[in-house]
Image 1 (cartoon, rainbow over the protein chains, first blue to last red):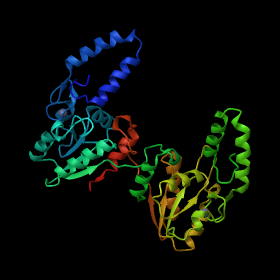
Image 2 (cartoon, rainbow over the protein chains, first blue to last red; image 1 turned 30 degrees about the vertical axis):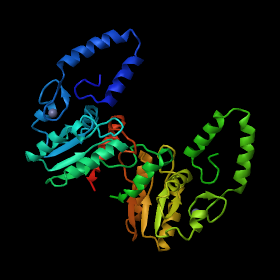
Image 3 (cartoon, rainbow over the protein chains, first blue to last red; image 1 turned 90 degrees about the horizontal axis):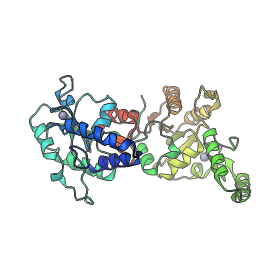
Image 4 (cartoon, helix red, strand yellow; image 1 turned 60 degrees about the vertical axis):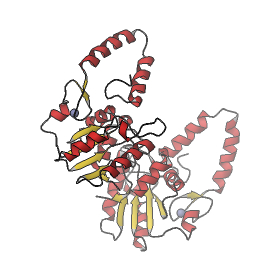
Length: 186
Length: 186
Ligand SMILES: [Zn+2]
Ligand SMILES: [Zn+2]
């Protein structure tokens, strides 16, 4: 399943687990439905999204802000962010994250195509929306460095308390980060 | 247990649950130990912390920065934050949060004593470290308003992705907040 277009190993693991947990009765129907869906799905050549059309609905939507580009690890991250409906721009899917352990280097990620999109012009802001994991943050720092010479504003997702987060349930790292990045009220 | 000094209803609920989950064999020993501990514990008259001395170890420590005061809902929040060892200042425990549902109003919280501490002078920054819950944030906004006229800088904990947070495990509210509060890299 990791070879489905745009699905990285993490998403694939989850999909397989989810399938395995289903009763046998559900499985054949699911597999059939999946096969149909998979036939219709294509990878967007612009952003790496997986959709029923190429360019995808997001890249093809003229109401989307072309000047703002949100860089994510996986297609599932793009979908998660887009559900929040707060980002008005477009996306770029890396197809993974830098990982010494898994032997994933910069050349294995869609970084060249990201730079090419930026160099075509018209993009003002790059939002690095990597996971708040060690590998995600390593990837974000690497990309930020590659973008240093380019005329774009580079931002990253805020880190701190998640919505509903209670202090004595949070790990120390999150509390430390929330304190360090504290900001003026109002 | 909610009447133990400094323990709010939330902490009390957790303590009771934890006790109930223990086997009966452990319970008598635990109750005995608790009784001994409780006898030795006092509430700090300065900050509301629960400690074996009054003023507490934090208020009595001359190395602690007197100019920075971190306001928390419960004693358990103070302990959680202090474990991270990142805050160099002192604390103020409200003893709860504003709650229409539980009938908790401003007069039920240690807000008067907070204002009195500030009015004595020497405090530059108030860090509002409420939980990222609806009631916590309502409390933070209320206190921020009460502090508007006073010559202190008011900050609050950062909100966003927790450490280790993966985008497609986060709720939409957290993703929306992380996007909204995105910040420059570097
Ligand atoms: Zn696309
Ligand atoms: Zn104290």
